[in-house]
Length: 289
Image (spheres, rainbow, N blue to C red):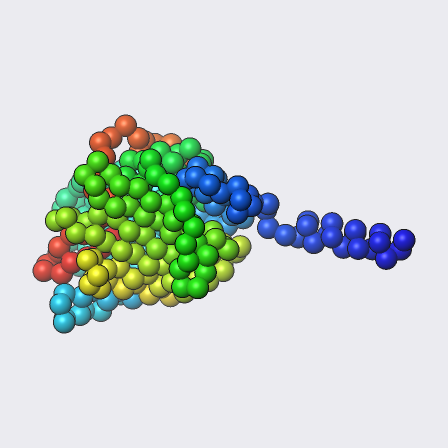
């Protein structure tokens, strides 16, 4: 009797210490159940902001150039990339737009959104219905879910073809429910593939510290992350192209004017569907943001 009671107590303690309950593999049969399982696995356990240094290798044929960028991310839907601090150049992405800044001034603005942000960050912090809406606008829905294997691990594959017949796929590792591969259309009728590698556990949330991008099978960009900081309060002005400032305060003890990730504006919805692959040319080099 005593051993039986002890076993029950031990089981209860282990259950209390385990991660939040998620849906079983049998319950994941369609895109909605997959996205819901991803959100349930990590919702409320991770972080919403990330600051990191990115070693960026840009390739054009046999040539390559290596740069150091800095990224500031606030999920859902906010990303700032400093590509050249000496010239004050960079990119800001909000919920539905991309802003290119040159010499501290706004150079171009376009309606755009990032499938990488949606499947690697936003899915874990926002409502499941909002993620499904985003995936639909990006061309990943309506779609189907099947099982496969990636790098020796079981995976779920959410796949769809858009109205132009172009393939969209998100590969999710079944064990950790994190994205490992993203396939989507790129400009000029090409296909972009993004691989998420070298996952590191940070505050109960997995972050891929190596991201490889190829187009039509040719490598175009490699991202390697270092000096990763999470949970840093980011001033709202970090994500405002019109107030580009390279000297803003990132004091982790200052929480004034932080980005409220629950702020619904500006809306990502009600806009026409566009190609989801962002592949542009700047100064002769192809860069993927």
